Length: 289
Length: 211
Image 1 (cartoon, helix red, strand yellow):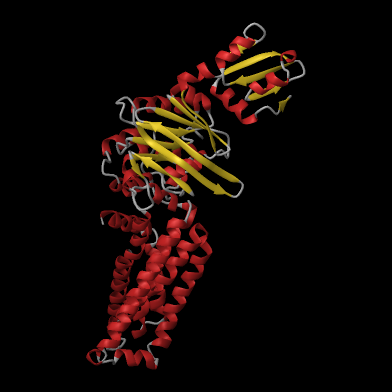
Image 2: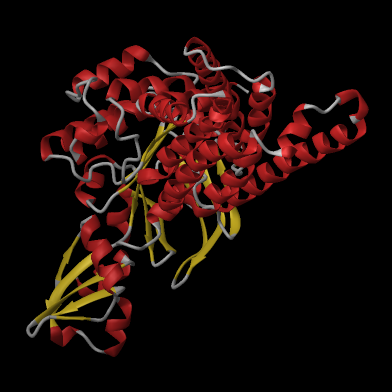
């Protein structure tokens, strides 16, 4: 199984924020979700992949070749959806598309028309007249119309209504059916990933927490709910995240087999959702309600 | 090469809405000085470059361009090469003004086309000052562009009234080229060096810019 994107020892420093020697790969033929709280470094990573930001150290390989500021050919095979849209506001959808189309060697007019109709976008409407959700739809239509082998999307579901959101997720699932196409998308909404992602990359404070197959997370992580009497100094150390109330606690473990052995008869052991994994990992042991 | 043409095409598409305003500004210059000094109207074509740069700076549209399969080098080079079609548009406007002046019965100085040629040479030179500043300022370029637009318009108007009657201009227009080939060659090399140097600075600044 090849990595369509490979990040090697990527570091970047911006004032108080830094990405620290991140190394991970994005698998070809799968949907990978990039998750993390605000300011974790998700957008910076995506910008690095698109050549908008240069790493201080390390390198990025896309389609097996190292990216550089001088080479942009690899972007011909990438459909990029930004968290904000930077289309020329004074142009109509039609004018904007005519401007973009010749830049891509595999631009497919019919596919583009299909998506414009599917997303109910009026070709004569100016970009500035579109709502945020409509702009996102237009951005998706562009990204899906040039036979991209890799879709890189930064918060693509932000600003979309729940119906289209669901349709989009179905569309993305369809897009990777030939097993040659890959998708990387960052999101805050972990329910989107619960629905379609194959792999999850979790970054927090510029560090990689994990890069795992989504199906393997329940084997690794466990949410424990129990009485406070169970918590002593040693037990507390086992949890990567702990939330205490006056009567009890909820804690996240990243060693399920060991956790089950200890807590099975004394507490409730559950499989955490992605949101719970993210929440407890980010908050750590400092939670008291 | 193909990408360079596409990037220039992109700018020309963006300029469509600006063209009527540009023609108005040319007419304004012509109205102020409808005589032989309108040969400097070609200089106004720099407004097209400034407007296209404004479009990229506005709303951070450079991020959109960077998302396309084009390198930063091509983006910067295309901006410099776009001066060719812009100068051509300026030249056509100058020719139109020449015809208008002629039809209104103004006597056209024999040095009219020399003035136009010199103005054409001044366009890349002025752009070589403007573009590095544009890439240095990035998306904060908005106020600088307003300032630069005013400078271009005032320079165009003043050049007509002052430069065309100046002794330097008179000397240049009456210069016998064959007697000064070495000097002209050196000036030519220096001129090309300035353009190349400006391009290199712009590229360096834009390559470092984080979007």
